Length: 241
Length: 351
Image (cartoon, rainbow over all chains, first blue to last red; front, side, top):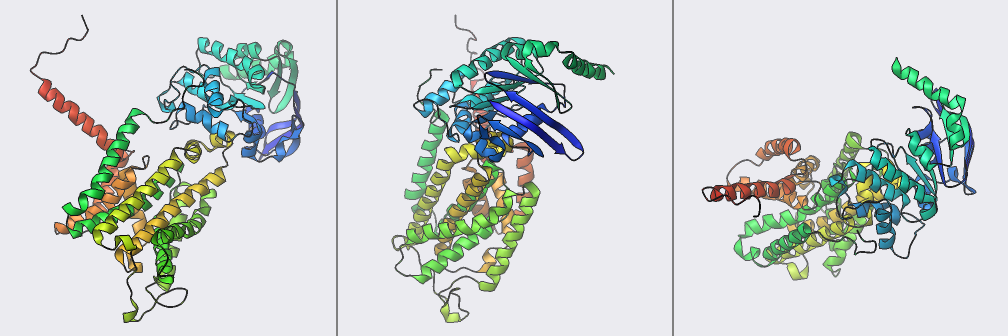
């Protein structure tokens, strides 16, 4: 379980996160909100890239904010990025190996079993010796995902994993994400603008708007919430101008 | 893909390259010393030695993305340390001296790399160049050990100049050439081993995206310092070879501007492949000798290197080591087409 209390982040005069209190129980949880709501900042706080000005984050009863950035990954916080960050120069195998060899928590009996298992888990059918630079957008996303789930992660943060993928690929992605908690034993937090992906994957969802939590609860209920609809409509109005 | 299948090791292209490199190495060790004159043998020894600091710079720039303009000065440090050790104790075996020059230079060179933890790009280049300048200034004051007394081991007395000794098994020029080639090959293997294992993967991640490296659990500070340590170690070993090769060291052999020339030749050779360092060594020591034998001024090289760097950056950013095989394949294809013309074209589809 991830418990966030009074989390505030300030960049000069901007407050991307404003006294957020939030709990992610288990399984796959959604985090949605219009652009600029503070979703990626929230991920950056969890993975240690951003130091909050106030608040605490407890992850499975451990103080996450007290850990140094790279130690969090070793402890079990993994993430993907809005713009995919698989390492081009390395092979698929070496990309996954990178996360595995720096992790304190290994999964199966051997390194190969873990790495090839993760590549298999996300459904990459290319030879793992291929360099990532030769892959298409879909497989690159999946390499990044394999890096996030290899071994035994505790917390997997997915930042818009479906961005730019065609519909049939999103269905595959959805199946993979739903299997992470069961197969890898991790809590997943999913940020995405694709509501059908969020609905399909997440039992519970929290909604941020301008750095404040405006709703949280079972996904179907949250998506019907008036404040949530208003927040999204506000964005649509702004877009039409 | 089968889970549990053998881990990826070497592709076919890499196997071919390994065979070619081994063949070149054997040719260099066995045949070359009897084929060329003493002059060219000395030049080739210098090529082997200088390919090592080029290798160090290539590791820093091509692998980790850290610009360093201090590698020749680190080489001077290595040469100083080796000369000091060689004069200190006449019984010290030469390989031990090389390892200790490498280790001591590693400590000093890592200090030069400390600013890299806070700076990158142009600022890091500038700071490392300033450090190189500082090393030059200090060496100008202390000079190199030449058999004198005391910690500095330097004497101004004309009679004090004793030659820095060579390894007992490699006192002649052909033998020392072989010795230098073997040591250089070991340094390349050390670098290759790093690049292909855990540090290499961490460096690749740091170079492309520090956030992605952090998110995978890479301790960025540690791996950046590791890169500086490795580059300094191999360069320190090269300094030991250099000291023994020339017999007497003078501070004018290591002007600060040479750091920039080394960067130029490393860029031309190719920073993304460690074999680019060998090409860089050829540019750095073979070309000047060639110009010299043609009676052309060696200063011409500064202009040639300038044009060369521009050409490489515009047309072949991965350097000659990457571009040359591609051009050869193109040429081969063109020749094949030339001779294929006139014959009946092969049927496009079977049946």
